[in-house]
Image 1 (cartoon, one colour):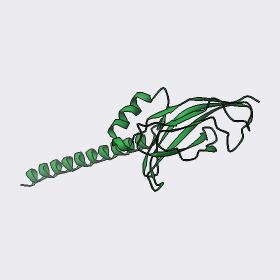
Image 2 (cartoon, one colour):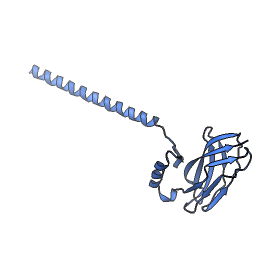
Image 3 (spheres, one colour):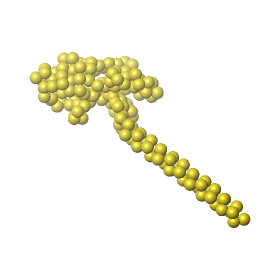
Image 4 (cartoon, one colour):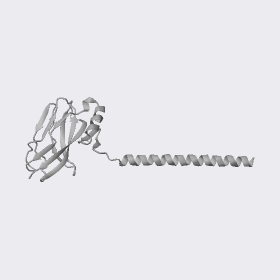
Length: 177
């Protein structure tokens, strides 16, 4: 009887050891996946506030379009704008900056222009009702001569001016003098 009990004890120990090893492997894999998930590059997709905020450039446009189709139609934004804005100097009005809130949209918008490298907001627009446009603009915060990659962050607002969602598009700002 003692020989039989010894085999059962060894089997139980092997079974328990096997379960402990499997649990450790599962925990290790879970920790690795969690770490990689948190460390993944977010690319140009960002979450801000309660709505989605997207930055669209040539590299991710197709993916963003697919993502937007999943959102409800009333929160989508049809963008019509120029993407290269030139200023004679940091205080001058741009002649080629153009932004429109097309008739396809459902919400009034306003937008902010943020310099990508510093995150500084250099311009905040007035509200643009559906069907309106803005031609040319003067920066709220003048920039020195140079080329600045920037993001135009659109804020879609309801009738009470509460934000519904945001979306961003990349532009290049060129200050000549």
